Image (cartoon, rainbow, N blue to C red):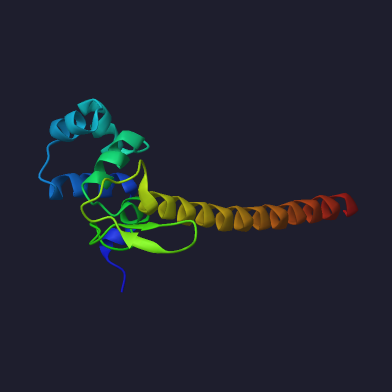
Length: 141
């Protein structure tokens, strides 16, 4: 069964994770290197800035959860996938700039957008056919 958190927006999840981290908007802004006003806007409707995503990654926030609502709020263990497909834990090691969590979240978002694009294009084609049919029907009368 899906949690109500799955249906939250990215902005709502940002606020929820900030509260879970026991940070005020001002503290989050200061630690992530943005202005408090930007955090406020991001929690309402604005795109979440890269600085915030990078900060949350360093706090072990599951970026897939943040961006899509899937999974748990926090990751249990960071893993790094090598080019050969092998992986290892990053526990106690410095993380790379974005990490595999962000890459995976971006891949998931991209796939979802591709599917939505296909669906919208199909619906547009159907609407065009209907409009053409209506035009032809009107001409015939």
